[in-house]
Length: 431
Image 1 (tube, rainbow, N blue to C red):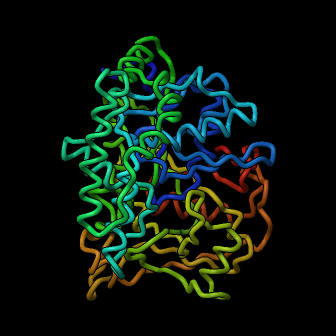
Image 2 (tube, rainbow, N blue to C red):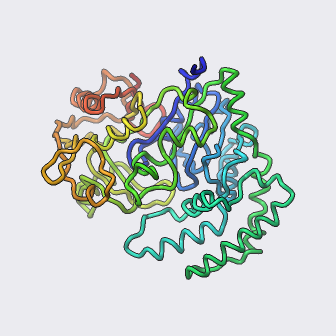
Image 3 (cartoon, helix red, strand yellow):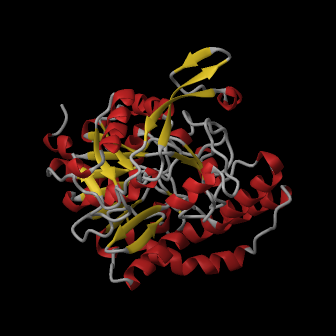
């Protein structure tokens, strides 16, 4: 049987290609949550939280860090770069948020080391025009080492032989970097540079699965945070233009150490239009050139990567893909973000299905060559051409904005409970 508190627990997933605005949603829900758990991905993620006009960009830390009562967990599914974590903690501490007393890092989380970043650069350079568009943060090579059963984990820091194992691993991987034509590392210099960051990480390492089991038994409420988006899932995303982890509910289970009985409500975050970063097929992508519709939306929405600064490709809302993501993950409710970015549009096309070789599809094909050939089937909705910026009550939204939300519910079969009308916490309609 599910635990009594599981009905109060929540999972937050992005249902598109990432960058849906999960950080804001997580930040709001974390206010009444005891434990916030980051479950997968690495420093390639970029969750933005805006409080009182101040923007905080988080890469490894859970988005609940700004709530002083929340214990924050970096789960075993995360691949952790010690330097990135130390720098992020230092930046928060400088702004008055010292997280170390309420942060735990799983002893099973794998470490992103300098050799992984060097391999990432080398692999991506070798692909030429077939680049995946990786963030070059070493995420993919770390997951490769994890699956090859050769990598080091955070818990290894607590073992006496860690220095020798670190040196051996960096040396072995350095041979591979050189063999592939990459720039070799100075192993001893890299080890020396790592030491202060490892010193920050070491006291945070714990058996987080055991901690979460105890928290569940005590009736603590938990919020599980996914990174990236379902369309970037290693199994169900637009492979090979995907991330290296499972970005859906499966990744939450394996990346936290808790069973499906503890997950609670699954909330899918959906941007009111569609964006993606890097390579890969994108049905309905708009003109990204200066002055094109895609560029207009990018500029209005500030669609530049929080981690890399790269411009995002933009298109209209794709509910065929969102519905697919909802079915895969048993989504219970939707948080629709950035509705205000569509305020100036007189008409808003929404993709409801695909057409491939004369056949209508209501799912996302596995083949990227097929996905690249699909034609979006659009229904055109009337815009509202009135500012919704900062609106926080449903009845204050323009009628056509309400109809747009209702259309999302109709096509996906999932209720929209939250609507974002600006970057701040207060600019949210709760239904």
